[in-house]
Image 1 (cartoon, rainbow, N blue to C red):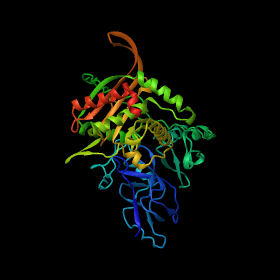
Image 2 (spheres, one colour):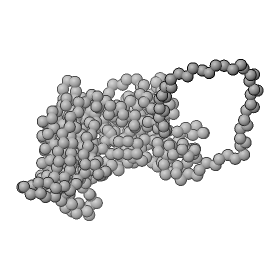
Image 3 (cartoon, rainbow, N blue to C red):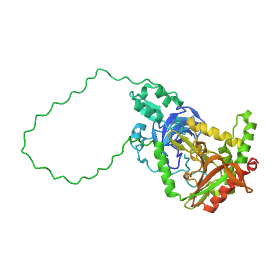
Image 4 (cartoon, rainbow, N blue to C red):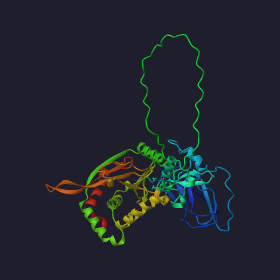
Length: 457
């Protein structure tokens, strides 16, 4: 029996997605779990993997089509199986029409409610924070004059609008022929049409007949006019709208609490240097963030509540530990997850972290990586930030905000010494965990990083 492939829900608040590119043609053989299409969400472009094997009998949603979550986008069946009849109703709207509607600033998508699919280990849908976004992520669909669809990144489209360049005349060098901002910057400026005469001024009206003098008007007290905002109004991108919806929902639904501590990273930094010297020939480099993730994984095993979701009927613990890593991109922020971190060594975590960042940059994240995080780490240390708090990514229960490692004077054994100190702040969902549990979790992370050899066992 043929299987309908539907638009997946790759995010806590995702309501629709855009089919950017089909990787398979109709009639092609499809394996279970094989990527067959690229789907654009509010935050990133991810590969859609088939959950059926057979022949791709029909592509229901053409490239550039906006499709609500749960609606059929393709049909896969056995080779000798006749394709199903075309779907008669609820055809998805073209991308250009959808942009004029729900993609406008502050507008909410008015798709029909669709039952949210629950992962095997969670009672409610997952969200990855968290657009990706990469310079080439988040492609916009722009109709060209000859009614063909041209794929371009939001940055390329904005530059083209500012310079008056028709994207249909620009050759794309990005993945799948997409137009990136470098293509627009390299395109020649459009020529200004010459020989257009200036508009003639309208004839002056005849003089009005003279009127008898009138008494001076009574002048009312002057009322101060409301000040008008200055500057341009920048429309919100789809990703920025999604970020606004998710963060507002998180702060309104989740009662946040915060626990902060300082961690002496002197031994961890020395160990990191030794590890990187050892792994230099293999091309593997362990970052400070990799050490932090390793410590969090160990701590999550000791305190599994921080790897859980809140559900009205109870607390749903997750079997797998999928650590989301906050990545800032041009359009905003995404938090793709490294899957199954519980059994990974420090070397494997370093390799997985680098691979995840590279695929987030070129838009080849898998749906589970985009939406499957169970805990998150947000690190602003590379920007010189010493301390901050992060918003929990629904439906997760906690996120660890990490500052920069800095040399500071500290008192040790009644002596003032210089140590490498890092400040971390845990944001927790008070419905699931309490402040005391948050303190225990953070202290466990602190213990592991201050005695890092235990994390290598």
